[in-house]
Length: 482
Image 1 (cartoon, one colour):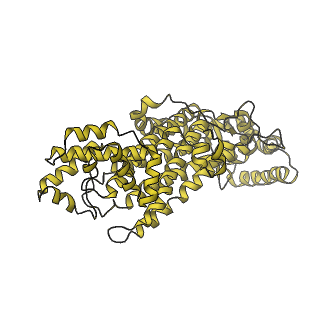
Image 2: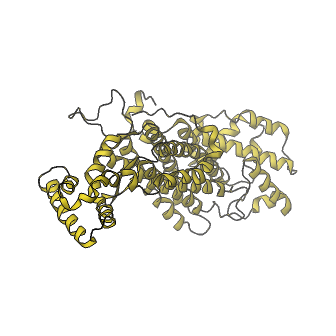
Image 3: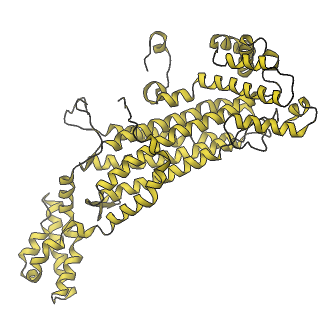
């Protein structure tokens, strides 16, 4: 996003100026917000007309013709005078629709446009995020399949543990992302419309407009809800829809943030080991002082933003807890920040993670070297069992292995040398009966258990079905600005 002149004289949110996609930035823009307000006024007028109120085709047509003709300067001036954003836009719309002016916003309260627009924007925000998340899962599934059988050191407590595979580890990431996918879809599908409810949610003004006809008021609510693209409206509201809806929406995004932070932390740890790296541009500079460095800056960005995304959840939690009775306005300023920032942040994270997962670089030789350093220790139980099969005594063998292991560990830890346990075993006459089996006993693929089979089953049963609805969106590439 380019900035000129006065733009450099005031704060600009880096979420928009530096990171976010055009789609998500537009979703929370003034243009989207206020044009949606106008659409809602048109839906209301159409439904009221259809149900018998004295509204003409000419008035509706005039509103439709001028729906996108928003004089933002006039609206700002009106708001300065009126201190009310909705009425400022009612006046601005009425100014360019003089015939329709008397029936714009008829019977409605400010939350008719404000809250219903928020719900539309939340829904559309989820619709932007879900295909992005699907693409991340798709790229990572391809990666998991490719490396399903490549042995690598597993770590518990960040200490070398039993072997796993590169692909199986990726499935741990995928499983969390799949949970996020289902959570986002559920939160999106659970959204309802506030609908046409009036000042305190009782529909009193509309009941008066329709002279006590309850059926017409219900039909008005249903018609407007359908025109806005929702299957259901909340049956009861105060002046606003329940702010627990915001908790529900932002909690799934915060949970996604935790997932991404974990994945990208793992990538950063593996980058330090030089086993896996994120994409690195040909002319990219890792450090201004250290030309050899290849910093995992994309993963670091994801962690940095994910931290913000997780923290934002505290806003709707606290807002919902202090909505007195039918509502209080201390939700408004907070929601103007917390709702857009959550979706913008999630959007940036997913775009960045797609870029990472499309270009992950694996270094099998480095992974193999790390295995070679640790595997002799891990193979001791196999060696003991082979010796027992060859006629040895388990306790005698265990003591021999224990002594040799401690000597080898001293070389590694105190002298900085390589693990020479295998050489010590080969030099000890006690182990002569199994020397011919040592290569087989130390083959990494015999230490990975069912990891490849788990990858295959997990991808086919849980990941691929989840991606099926998004197959048409899989080819989209991300242009990531660093």
